[in-house]
Length: 115
Image (cartoon, rainbow, N blue to C red):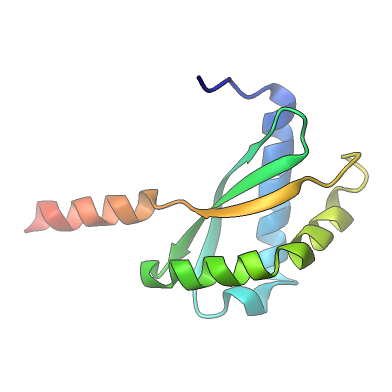
């Protein structure tokens, strides 16, 4: 059974989403070269020590490669996140990336409808 997120979890999730997006635009631009990466949502654990970051990658076929590159550079991204949230959070949460394939699913459905 999945528990409802608290207001604090939601606020921290939104802040991390904003900061990770900013990191992708500035410091980690070279990691997402050739693809458009959007942070679609962030789920934070109740104790705020872990954040799962869901990404939408376009074009869809570059999703696996981009995810692998980001996973290899998680420590650098977490360090940059720590510089941004140091005044709001006691500890910087561990982060994990996952592909949010909902846009790909919608695209596939639209193509099937048009046939």
